Image (cartoon, rainbow, N blue to C red):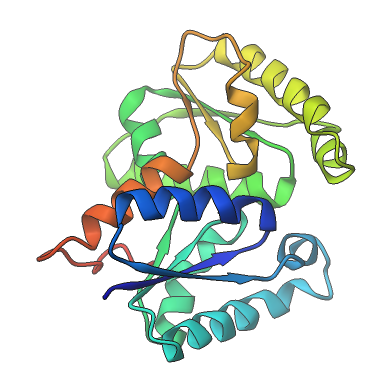
Length: 224
């Protein structure tokens, strides 16, 4: 039986990720690893250097527990996929890669919205990487939604969603597609009234995972 390990930086995404994964891979086993200080530590000059080793240790633990593949569920750490795979000796996928590919295929004007700078920069970098592979040169607009992260951290999901939805509507007027850099922002998309696609990472990421783990498929080339 296939075993998939998810590496999370926030507990809020565990349930929706596992729910989507069970629907896509009903015969697989899933295990979750959480380090909920990584995002904060990425913004700390003294602690940021520890993140690479921490992810390697988590991926190594997953490997030792019998995992066939690891998936990073946070855009803030997607850039660590390749070195983590190399050091831990197990394929490491990025949940936001499929979303980035979809955005690049949708239009030449991509708006990226985040609530944290540590997530915005890696998402923009991923979009540019996937665009280059596709031979595209999109214009990328980006915005950090002031106050949204503080709101949700304080338990005010409604204010977070209202702030993010307003940003979606504002940037959508200048874009062909809107990308939400954090999976935890998905609930805000439901209340935004826009005429362009608003993309989040969980559904396309898990769909690609399912495709890769079907009989005869391989994770080679995506373990980065």
